[in-house]
Length: 244
Image 1 (cartoon, helix red, strand yellow):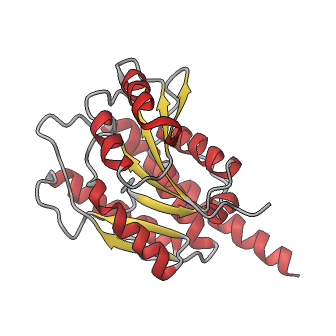
Image 2 (image 1 turned 135 degrees about the vertical axis):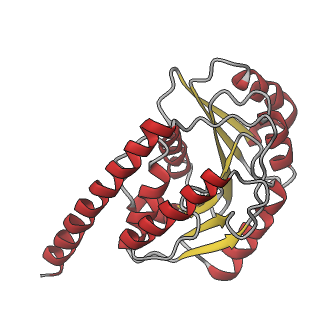
């Protein structure tokens, strides 16, 4: 059975009841299916989505994790739905309003003109308002992950992306939190997938609250780097064995 040829929008959310209503409404103007994965929120996130489902109809889908499992696990749940429903691809966007939904058209144009496996929104060409520590961290982590992936990725932490379903099917992920997005890039690089960087805006609200834990997620990142080097070696060995 062939993939349906359409593209969906995937929003993963954890306690984003304050912003998700506006994000969904702005995404809805594209007429695309919107899949929201509520990762065990304890605020009004699910209620906000349900209220919009009455207005938007079956174009809006809600999947709920009973408990908080991590952003990576929420993405994997969404990817499984994308594969099951045979979409051609998916655009991921954060639920906290940090992404300009008006730029979704940039992704759609890039997909139409370039037929990429992955498109990644690059915030580092327009860093106005980005806290210095976050800018420095993004530059550093992007440099390391690019080296391991063998592909130049300007902003590995960006959650604003397009992924072709055939690429999602091929990539087997091992992480389940904020390290999942860079892991996905590394594995896509090893497969030689076509990855395109496009510039996007940086939006930071004055009351923005990050769910990133500076200590735990830093440890997870360096663990990812160590694992990434090991995974890359195993990937090469497996590829060589399969080619014999």
